[in-house]
Length: 614
Image (tube, rainbow, N blue to C red; front, side, top):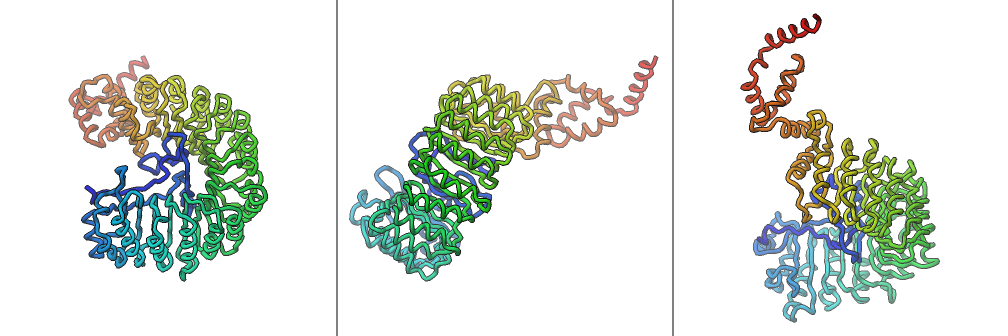
């Protein structure tokens, strides 16, 4: 039912280097996967604590259908977000959108006063006839009149095909004083489109509302395009997020330096993926960044030869006044020299909390040994680290794992997709056994982890209270013994005391959509551990495994018979908190009615003490 569809858009789905603290999520962002990631976007850091590796801001858009179109025509205040996705030959999109007569209905968008979030995707002129293009142009003209939309996202649409449609979008940008977030991605913008966009931004009377600007997937480095665009953006002092994920050229770099040096700038998030600044430009830019102490997130991913520039850029996070909390260097050509420089620069800094250096395959075991210095240093503030996809060998894996043995700060480690280093990741057991370990999320997918390693992890987790996620699927060496070892860690059934002292923290070992079939026992135990009340989790495990509901287990009733009289009422109250416990009480009363005769029990105990005295 299209009326019920809510699209949560993540357009960098192929990026494999994300870490998200699952404690606050319903599913896992950053699935391990192919080596074909080719883009990323700066995350929203307007909230200091929002430092997940989710590279695109997550937005909810209700898909346009017949019901929503009626709401649109009525200017229904209940319709505040809308996603319009054209159908295409590849089957992606909504055929209903193509059937709408936008020549007639386009004005409904322009007249609407309640829409706040609007999303457009998938219009490609080459896949539609001229009639469809007329409808898209009418659609854009209708949008141009809207003044209520605060967040506009245009993705994967051929905006350069017809100047009229993009001109209408630029009119919307120029005259909508409520616009606070604008994202244009993978839209094949040419020089003319870039200039139209720059002029629209320059002409806006209200330059205080726009706080986030994201442009990616277009080369704006030539013919002064980037200079004109960034010069226009320089007038937006309230801009807190800027992402220019395409080449901006030397001229654009110069204008960006001017923006960073503007004392009125409030920029906190800067994304410059796919920008290869060379020589003097990179030095000047790095010096400007070092002085921009309010910056919280810097993304320099997909920039080649970053190793030679890291010493200059490290001034940014080594500045004592720096507030930088997250640094992304995915696929940035980092080698041993760069890894060493990065490790040394991060060892004593106290603000950076999140680092992503995934898919830098030129780093050898030597580089990992040097980088690990920042993990061994007690002054390091690093809480989240992604080293995914680096083909780390056994020696490198051992260096990282051993460095974490006494680390008390790191909360999340993504070491997935490293292939050949399966055996040495077992050294992480020392970290998991450390009672002061802060590690909550460990991703070891696609690492040749075998049965022996999982059993070691299970033993190490016996008394661990911090790790809630251990992702180990996509490792062909796992067996039923692996899952059995984890089950025993979550619920040691050898005695009530050992069940009580079992691991009640771990709640995820595979992603929700994994094809691996876990044993029903392990699934049930993981589900129990989702309860934040760990005392109740322990109670449920004890009730389930030591006092079955069917009344066949008479052995454990002896536990109650042997209790001290002062303890017995508390124990009875403890088991009787729910229907399962009350059923047990009934069985207990039937099997040992004298247990509830406290006078006779006290006399029996007194007689026993007299015999012992004799």
